[in-house]
Length: 446
Image (cartoon, rainbow, N blue to C red; front, side, top):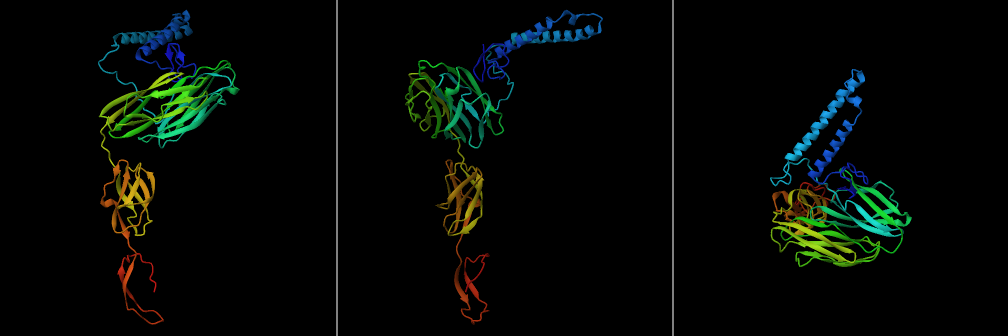
């Protein structure tokens, strides 16, 4: 039997298209692919051989003589293809450890992933509700929308439950998918959701449910996703957090508990709870701390027990020694402003993401606004002299340079005038001596 990778439906071994969700069927391994191709070519060969005899007749009639060469060519091609598959299959070293086979395609990981790929409510009694989580991982900047691609979705509702930002400019968004069977009859129902994000191809998420007659309540049933928390590469001394969800897909109250064992670098913000039938899933925030870990791969397991079954979640991370590069300032505009402060300054550079402070000398700027990884703005504080404008992020503070200098311009000061008097009618030329007059003086008052 084959299993559809999109909806999990069991299919015959020679199926080409899933009869449930309509997706093309892809065999799980090379051996299944070879057997499937063999069946398809055998079927084509049998069809060709069972054709009417007139198709292969060597009669002098025009119609028969026209069809005979074409049919003969089809027969010969089918025979050669079949022989090629059999010979290659016989000579191929099954299970060889001499290295992986050459890649046949390049797979690009999409920016947006969905877990689970199939939302299956299973059996739900008529007149009751069931809630399952759907976790979407996407980039900080991507915009996406959920649409109903096919099916009647009046019994389905989707609401946002939480959103968590990760360390690598990703975010985890959790939705509650609620099925309300009050308007449904006994039977099976399905809906296909489409998740569209930027220029990526839409991702289909099948949703299915089996409505049953109202009888004695179904037992509680534990449902935990994801079953793998992969924190990826983490620098020594860093911390990271990922969410997982616990749901009750049964008809009675679920009492659950989670045990991480004696793993000091792994913590859970909650380790037990109760979920009523149709209640919202619980979110557990799992945190790892690499302060005490050595370089290399590390793993742990979180074990769940409940009155509705058991489950385990694997936790993996790779501790590395990464060279952290802090922000850099390449230009500031304008390069000067009054000593009283309040000058809007645009700072250009690199690696500004996560900016926590902009400093003018030893004084922090105000109204710091992050525009992009290469540009931020801030208001200058009060100050004097020439100072360096530095940017601070979690990865450090920019190194002062000649490109980040900001000059405070003092107010003008008069220290003497000559002459000091003149006629009341005016018109006396006066020389004014002082400091900080600059070239932008716009008037003199006497």
